Image (cartoon, helix red, strand yellow):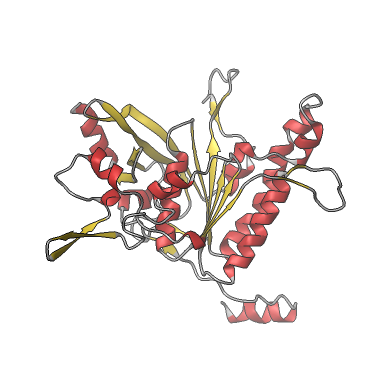
Length: 341
């Protein structure tokens, strides 16, 4: 820190408790790094990333894979599951829990007679003689520590002086997440916070209005809340070295005749405060088949904004196996595979 700035803060009694360095997550896939961060350095901690797309296009699976990679990098994971769709089996496939065969080591010991052979976890490779479906059905995940994963979901309870039970609001759940970020920062020097999804946030105004009294105030409650939330989180992300991934849905505006009809809920705050914005969409012939059976989906992850050193409108292809991990490859390779079908 500049010495003059230190003196000014000391005179104003604005003393920071510590200095937070910039950290990066190198995924090992340059094209993926470039879409969500810097091609050579990786994906930055301390930044906000929005991943949007239509239903069943791989938003959650990709976010889980990024969180799993970060957990291998020593990060703690906070998963705010507002859609209550978090599934432990699905998390194991994506690497967020320990593989039941390799027990988290990433390797499987095969004993044949008096010799031992170590194979990579079958979800990440396995026996090359077997089909991809057989490999993925034999093993799950890459081996992760569940103690570094905290899942926060909506729940029914009493709050403050209230006596009647009710459902938690977005303000209360995000306050819990924010407090947990502060607690985790004392134990870990980096973390990943996933909010899945923005469109599922139920604000206090919407909850109190109910279904019958919904109107303009309740409809505008989410954009107003996001503006207040992100003004705080953009600073906390840097202070806590937290990579905040905001999963968002795509909605279609039937009145948009001369512009892009697809938009993301939550107002204009998220596009403004996000350092990286990326959208997923299935490629042509998006279903992957093995022996005639659908075994996964494939598509493209493309950014529309990147303020972390990458190039805007960069692309990377992904393949999501229903019973296994997510694979990333150059977008050109996916196009070639489609042309060959």
